[in-house]
Image (cartoon, rainbow over all chains, first blue to last red; front, side, top):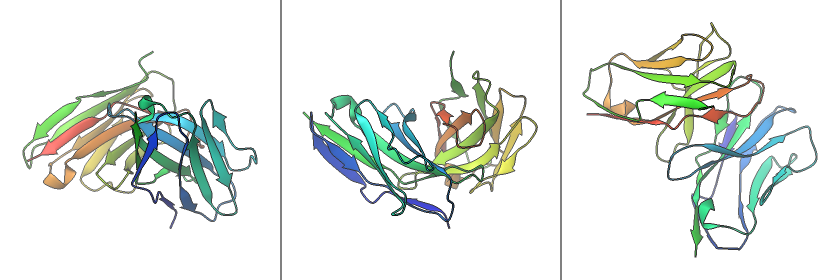
Length: 113
Length: 113
C-alpha cells in the first residue's frame, strides 16, 4: 500500500532557529510528486512547497526547503529563521499518478518566542 | 479571484438528516476533490472528479454522494447523516489530476448528533 508517514506528531522551535520536519513514503513508482502543506489555526490548507521526483534538485521557497532523498523515500522540510507565523500543522502529501493524493497524519509545529 | 469557496462553514445535524455541502472554484481547474479530516488521521479522500462530467470514489466514499454540476461546482451530499460523519470537510481543486498543486477551500466543520 502507498503510505505517507510523519513520525513527529509535534515539534517545537525557538523563534529565529531552524527546524526540520520528517516525512517518509512508501512507493513502487519512479515518477511522482511530493508536497508540503501548512494548516494554520484558521484551518486553510496552504501549499508550502512542491517537488517533482524526477528532478534531482531540492525545491526551495524562501525560508522553506526540502531534503529529497529518492532512494531512501524521504522528503523532509526545513524551515529556517522560524517565525511565529510558522506555527501550524504541516502535512506531507504524495501523488503517485493515480488521481489520488495521499496525506500523512501531520506534524504540529510550535514556535516559541 | 476567490479561489475555492465552501458553504456552509459550520453545520450541526441530527442523526438521519440529510444535507449538501457546496464547493465552487473560479480558477478554471479541471479536477476537484472532497476530503474529510479527522484528528490523527490526516486528510482522507472521499470522492474526486478528474474532469467535468466524471466522478469517482476515493478512500472513504460510504455514506456520501457527489455531483459535478459544471466545471466550477462540486457538491457533496450526506443522505442520512451518522455520528461517524462528524468531521471537517475540505473541497480542493487542481488544474489537472497529474500532480498539480491542490488548492483548498476553508473547510466545513460538521457535527452529527
